[in-house]
Length: 175
View (spheres, rainbow, N blue to C red):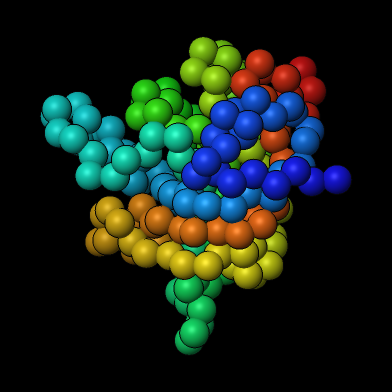
């Protein structure tokens, strides 16, 4: 059984979901990968503001492909999340509600998950074409020159995820 969460209105329900729970999320999420995280960190270190409000939003570690005609996005499967571990606390300080990707995270990251109450969600690796069918709209909102690594705003509907590490640090990965 999956629970349906409107991430634009029910971010507290998202944050409080337990490890192992399946969710169907709908609403606005943002994609960001390695290069975007690095640029955001550089902007913050220079004292610049970020022109995207990540407050109570999900950051999806995603590898998109160009859309086919008439589609808002091409394949949009998750990428390995551990590559963003060094930037996790920075994104938590931006007020995010959760992160979304695939694979395990570092043990140190669980401490930040508990501290900031920001769960880690996973979705189905290898199912990028299926996941694209859950995307209603997409647009690049930051770092357009990065192409597939740019920050994109996605509006999703019934996007399937599993709470992999909940805000208490409980994990489906064991240990």
